[in-house]
Length: 443
Image (tube, rainbow, N blue to C red; front, side, top):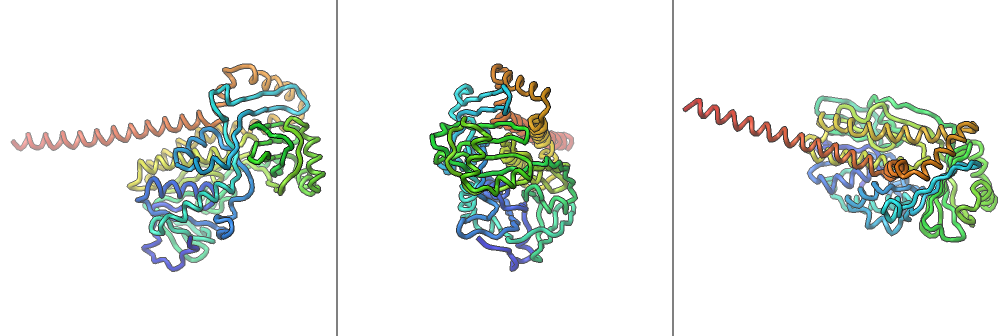
C-alpha cells in the first residue's frame, strides 16, 4: 500500500469519510466500509509507517484481547471470523475470586446454552488479516496517508478541512477519530476528555502452563488490582497483572524464572503450574472518556472515545459496537456521510452503552482495589450470591458477553430505519396527494 499521498491533486483529496488512525479500530472500520458501502471514497491517516515484515503497522503488537460472544457475532456477520477463529481460543469457563476472601463466582458456557462465552486472540492475527484485506482495495476507493498526522482542522457547514503534517490538505464530509486514548486530533477538534489516573500499571505477557487449561479464564481481585489469566492457543495464558507502578516495574525487571515463581506465588495453582513467560510490557492505566461521541461532521470510535481499565476486558468489545452503530448509520445516510441526522443518532446510540460499560468497569476497579474489611465482606457476599442466583447471573453474563448492549443497539437502529421509511413514505404520499389535488382543482 502507498505511503503519504504528496502528489495527489486537490480534487483527489476530497473524501466522503476520513479515518484518523489506522490501528485495529480504524482499519476494521475502513475494511467494512469498502465492503458494505463501496460507493464511499475514504482515506486513512496513520502516524506509523507500515511494518513490511508483519504486513501491518506497529499499532498491532503481541497483546491479546478477549472477544465477547457479541463481538464474535459481529465479526462473523462482517465475514472475518472464519479466518480468525483458528487463531483464537474459546473461553468455556470463567472463575472470579477475591484473593484472601471466601467469595467466588463461576460462569460456564454450557449453562447459557453456548459452546463459548467468548474467545481470546492475539492482536497480531487481527492486524495481519485486516491489512491483507485492505491491500486488495483499489486506491480510487481507499487512499492512505502515512506516516502522517492531522495538524489542523477547519470546519464548514458541509465539510471538514484537514491540514496534515506532510503538507497535504484534505476535505471530508465526515471525520472519524480512531487514534487511541491520547488522540491528538480530538483536542484539535475541540472535544474535551475526562481523565482519571488509577495509579496502577498493567503488566501484560503470555505465559505457558504445564497442563492443558481447558478453556478456563480467571479473574482474581487483589488489593493492588486484578490479576487475569485468559486462555490462549498452544497451552498458554494471556496474563494481565495489575498492580502499583513501582511493583510492576520490579516484576518486569525480574529474570524469567524469578517472574514465573512470583506469579505462581501470587496466583496459586488454580490455573496449573506456570512453566515459562514471554515478553513483558507495561501499560499505565487511566480512564479517559471524551465529553461527547459526535460533533458537527465528526464522530469518535474506540479508545479515542473511551479508554477503559482492562478489568473486565470490555474495551475493544465496546469499540466494535461503536463501529457497528456507525456502519449501520452510514448505510442509512450514505448520500451524505456526515449528515446531522447521522451524528445525532450516533451520539444517542453510543452514549447509553458507553456510560453503562464505563460505570461497570470503573465501579469494579474502585470496589475491588480496596483493602477495607467491610467492603471485602460485601464483595465476598456479592460474588457468592452471583454464583448461586440465576436471575442475577443471567443479566451479568449477558452484559459481559456483549449480548444485551448489542441487541439494544440493533433494536434502536431498526426503529430509526422504520421511522426513516415511514417519513419517506409519508412525504411521498403527501406529494402525491398534493399533485392529485392540483389536477382536480384544474379540472
